[in-house]
Length: 246
Image 1 (tube, rainbow, N blue to C red):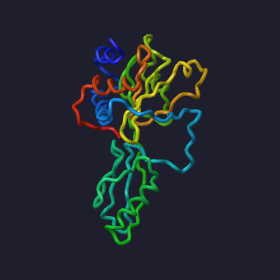
Image 2: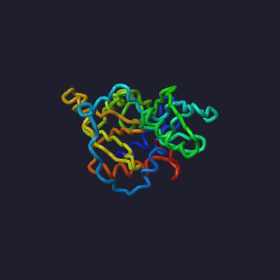
Image 3: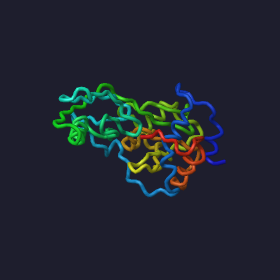
C-alpha cells in the first residue's frame, strides 16, 4: 500500500483539540485539486539562509487579523472586520477588497482610491486591532497529525516537532511541503529534513506560510507532483466545490 493509502487508513482520530481537521485541510486545497493533474514547476522556496528579514515598520496583514477601517469624514462607514481565509475583507459600498499581504497603510491607500467614486473627500486609515493565527497542517509519520497554529517564524522542522516528532517509520530525507501558489495551484516541494535535524544544514529549514501542508511519508516519493494530485483528490474526504483556503 502506498503512502497515501497508509495515511488514509492508519489515522482515525486527530488530536490538537480541533474537530475534523482533515475537512478543513481538504477544503483549503479543493481549488487546487480542480486544476490540471500535472502541476507546473514551482519557484524555489525561501530558506532561513535566503529569506530576507522584514524591514521595521512594514507589517503586512495576515489571514485572521482583526482591523478597524476608519472614515474620518464619514464615520457612519466605520467598520471592524477580520481578514477572511481568502485574504479579503468586505466593506460597505465597495464589497470585497484584498487585504492579506498589504501593509495597513497600503490598504488604506487602496481603499481611498476605491471610495473616490463613492465619497467626495475620503480620508481613511486602517488600524490593526488583533493579530490572527492562521493554521498549518502536519500529516503522515509524525506523533500527532492535525492542525497547528502558525506562530511567527515557525519552520517546517519546528512544526514537525510540535506535532510529536518523527515516527520511526518516517522518511526524513524527503518531507513533502504542499503550498498553494497565488494562482491557486497546489505545488509539492521535497525537503531533506535529515540535514536540518542533524545540524549539518540548519539554514535549509523552510519558513512556513499560512495553510501550508507538511506531509512526512514512509518511503521515497519519485513523482512529487503526482503524489500531490493523488493526496488532494483521493485521500481527503471532501465535497467538490468547498473551499476555505486563503
